[in-house]
Image (tube, rainbow, N blue to C red; front, side, top):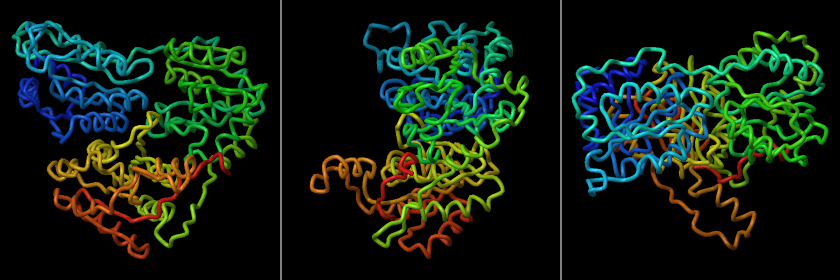
Length: 533
């Protein structure tokens, strides 16, 4: 058995059946090992696309997603997507090929400091030097990716290491792969319940890990505490249009229980100008660095800090909470504020973002099982605010765009019985347009809906606001026929300029049985903002 076989058998033991990858010289032994182990390789057209697919796949399956790319530029192309997975708190394993360990310092082909490149963006980045260690190293990486605050991990695999014979190496035992729990103390749980019970307007906030798709007990937690629970996963934070008037909600709260949310720019750094001066904070964080940030930003306003896994804490609060329904009126008030939406009326007579999202939402509602992908700047924000499926993946807190087409492909693989709609702008779709070919080749049908305003509209709106209409520069795009490009790559295409034609175009796309592109020309409007209500 080679080191490559030990890697793949270890992955298979923990339930990995699919790897998203772009091939290259140094990872060919691992491809060969996947052949013997029956592990599927979804071969992408760009390394970053493989990481994006693994990210969405992990979020929708609840398991660690695995991406694999080659060395040199292959590894370099994957790095940006690691940032997105880190900010979305997604457990992901990136395997990269690497130059031979025995040739270090000699100038080997594609020799580069991969570990130093990825370390700032991962929870763990290692370069094993012995094939016999690979099984335990894979187990450690999987365990670390899931434990504490989940996130990406990276293994750089020297070509000589994956080819080395290790016939006497044993596979890691099952527990070696499992998440390490971090339970809160009973006293801490009691303190949280007591504080929430005494508050008149308590709110629980949490980050991407605890969104409705990835944590299915949000309502149970809210009922156990008798307090609203609000997951936040947008870089727009207090101005997230998908959360309506969240700024006013948090501004009125007298207690915030921060269940693992980073206290950063998305929460105005916790400044008193955004929150009531007499409001108290309870902060639960699995990692010391984030707790230290909270302490710096809040100072004396922090009433209690707890070191614990947020999933374990949520489970403990659900088990211990009594839910006495003291705050029914406050919870209704919060729900109403979060549900506020702008209708986004246009002036040009073109289809508006709101109209496009409303039309897509009708098709989402008719699906027995649906996944919605939202990606992009201004149109992506409309999509997040106005569409809702049984599950959702968004481009997240990092502010990066471009993964949406990849997310859609992975979503259909993760949930093969779901109807998948991936909504994005015309800027966003250009990042990984070639993955239509991947989807067609793999046989994965889903619907990509493009809100096409022929510009990088987020930046266009900044220029209008800050510099004026006479100083617009560099943000224009063309009326490119992305629908025809998708058809040329093996998919189905629809081109829509009239609202009356939109519903039938969406129906044909859903029924096509192909990866579909519905290219809709829209008026370029600014995104809605909850803070503007």
